[in-house]
Figure (cartoon, protein in one colour):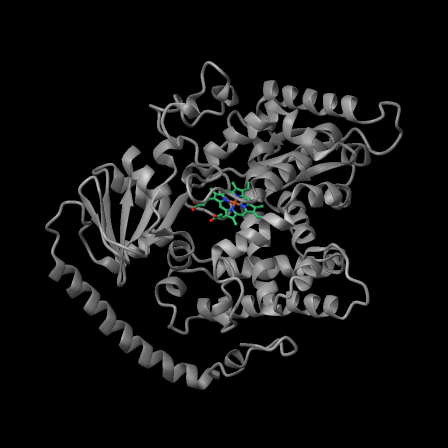
Length: 509
Ligand code: HEM
């Protein structure tokens, strides 16, 4: 474990040189051959006696699972309700249907972090750089810490600062122009998450925030199937992953040390964690977890919220009216203060309770976008059955949200944007249990939901009240329909094919 003062874990310093890597690559290549042969033999030895076992070579199946996860799941569900496949030595059971959903989200034996750690990647893993996080191994400890940091009084206090941050970001867009939401909007969300999870010294240093963002995307790009399937193999991706994780660790740890030496503690997240007595490693692990669990999901959803609103005049009008009503009811209507200052004086409770139209828009966007989400678990405790299918201790489980979110029997016209489907009388999301999984369900509901919704509402309110905007394609024309999200791109779900842009003109300062 790295001591607080030494920010370079010794095991990373001792990484092999280029020459020794070449030798190691040959040895590793031979080892891979042996491992693949063993896996192939294991596959045939097991035999495909039950028709839920996928045929073919497990390494190829696993590769498709990592590269085009959504297509892989959907194409296999066409033939069967459940299926089983191997990812190297691991057995994965993919489930669908009501009974399976109940088990998946409620069974005590199923562990969330283990499922994602091995079958997903992309998030910083401190163990990749041989740094232990002594206090944060347990998800419940992480959640407890998170809930305390995101409590209402803290958010109310920080709300004006979040508005100022987003306003400053939007100022860089100029008075009018065209923006790529999957870049510019992400940057706003990233800034808010850094503000919430770190300290003002970092949040106010634009270069450092940009650097943090760059290292994150480097990490995401390095999450290749090779790095995930063969974590011991010294591939380029693995090295990039370790370098990015190390850079993230060092950057955050530098700010933790800075705050440790500060003469007066403040109420920023890092100071709260220092006051709790947490080690630097634990604080860095926690901060990275919060920044990244929040930013990817929130960023993706704000982008799509704005795209759907830009294409739907009726809902755009409803949401704009709601923002105006909020300002009329909670701010001085004669105020000459800029828009972001007025909006920032509205209390959190009003943002939560007085925006039913925007709540429906957010829910519908989540249904459509999170529909490609794949939930993962690992069975850690005991063998059990789901509708006659044996789930062994050690098995992984996968459940795709599309089973409910894009199911025409639950949501008619499932690919259409229709926030009215949640209205009383229709309530399509109440037809079956756990029909809506946008914020998780059962044992693991999202603990960042309140703050994520607030972040989304804040950006949407500033855009909808501050700008005239419309969606355009790359030729500058209003598209006849919004492209579908790329459901295999679980980090951003960008539009497939023709990209979309937001054309804007500032109307209120
Ligand atoms: C639009 C934004 C977000 C969406 C759509 C979202 C969605 C989800 C979903 C679906 C789950 C359940 C995962 C599963 O069952 O496998 C989850 C869990 C979780 N989310 Fe979020 N999330 C968002 C933002 C955030 C933010 C901002 C934070 C933290 C600041 C956060 C922290 C967490 C944590 C800690 C869990 C695990 C809870 C547990 O295991 O008990 N999320 N989220």
